[in-house]
Image (cartoon, rainbow, N blue to C red; front, top):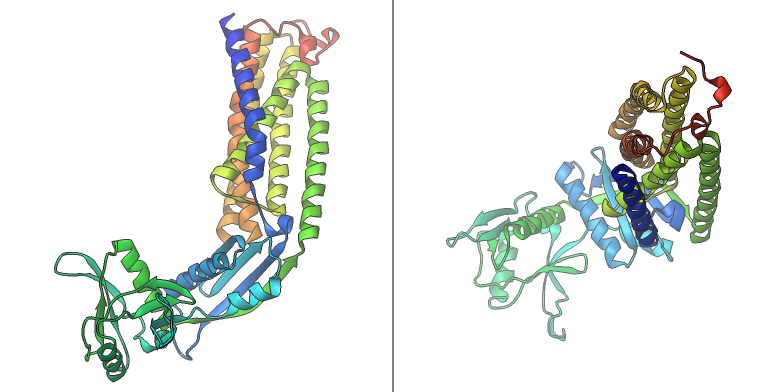
Length: 416
């Protein structure tokens, strides 16, 4: 009685949680550009100045600058990643004016130090005093002042120019901008004639490092050249999503009918485990902030197929044990045990292949591999352990007493 009660409570609680949370989870799933519409560009990055070195730090900061620039343009959750030593991949979904966004994104990140010009409104700084190329490359660094507070040290190339600017702006602000975004607004306290200055204020260590990195980036802006691009219209993306969802629903219904019709009550338990598996994957997508793309859906379908195979192998092994004349409980234990290694071998092998794809692949290949790995791990939890547990509980509770409940005919059972 206790076993049956624990089975019923488990199934009812999980069913309730899935029913009430699924609509909210589906609304929060982030769609890729192939399902929502948008564009993807692979940039080749190189220094603006001939002979300058392209560092990993400057590539990463340029990628961060692209992401901030895309956010400022009002685009929907852009994805910007670095690839190799000189490439940046940009994905932006839900774009209405693609040409304008692509034009803005391609422009180099512009660092400027500005002061207030005559006629500027309060808090507005339009006069450009210094640009990124006026600073010594890589010279910006974070140090500590006498009170152990973080400050940013900088060094300019033209000492006389910097001396003239700081002398003229004593008591005024020399505001730092990246593109048109204000980063900091330090005051000029004295004339600086040696070209070395420090920017101090109420900075945390992380904010100080971020500002120093940005100044270094501005001293070595990168030129971006498009090497590859693809565009998906919003209508085509929605059509792809609708067709994919319909195909997935039809395929899922066919699978559930097959499992129940072929394996009776154990097939129904396996179907419940598959539904739980799907819900957990959607939850992982939302929690980990994954982006759902067509390759991701392909990995999802492949993982479901492997989960179905695992259930088929297990149920067939159980039926073989029953046909040999063993009791139902002995057949379930033996079938689970003999199928476990076969299923695990297949899953581990696939995980290894997916890990190699993730390590050496790029873009959509990485996404496919990552989702496949997550899917297999969830399949092991839900279909190897959870479904086995449900079946064992029902058998021990006496709810499954006859071979025909497993789809086995009495005439097929051999006497021991």
